Length: 318
Image 1: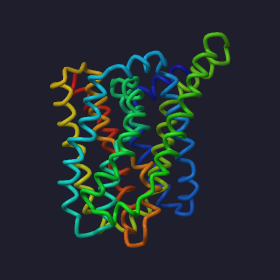
Image 2: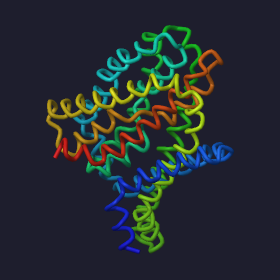
Image 3: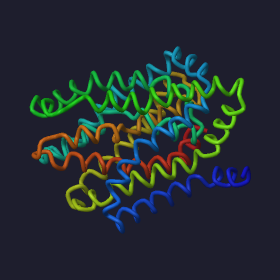
Image 4: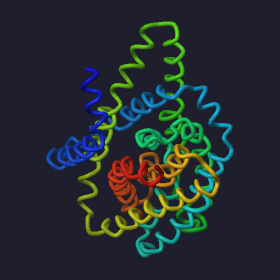
């Protein structure tokens, strides 16, 4: 078994690309499976984040929460610079209110879940990003209405519900974090705790593969049905990621962050809260019918970008 774990750790980027391809094939060949795959996303994310948090000693999270320089940098990138970039990019789809609102929703909300996993894979500081997650969630809840009002007007703002943010924060951060803390405490005295720790550490790659496959498989058909319309937002998402990488690397250099912290800022700047925002987009009136598909399209684009960044970021910040 250790040799198998070493093998998939060594080939994880290739395996993630295979998982994305398999998920797409499953979604296209077995369309009725999409609702089932959709239901699997949340439990798999909770397991994946539980495994990730388990690998981060809680004492390190406590220290990271006191790292004002890192927290200030990640907040500035996500809530000062990238919203301006989002405003500029959204101008290209302002003629279609569904695409316009979908782009704003997803690009204005930084990720708090699987970004921690990808950051760790690229040698970034998982502990710092985990410590930043509550702040990122709180600030986006407070600022999203403000930015939507400024960028899209009061009509768009009145159609938005905040409840999915609160639910996602509880299920994807609080529950896995408490569970990981309990297992860490148990592992100090009991063999069972150590065994859970070892199994979850060994299963990180398969868990990530399963998560990627079900996300892609559950969404690929709905995106494919509106390919011509959604093709307009794909370059916007790619440009957003490229700009975020450049801005985040520069911000890390200016603020004097170390290598692992700078890599964490880069991943945070690129990844968006698409799986949390999607329920909000689905609850919009019919006049915004393309908004949820614009959110889903960002997820699919971002997953490929994340897999590539696992290889690229260590080279950009060696």
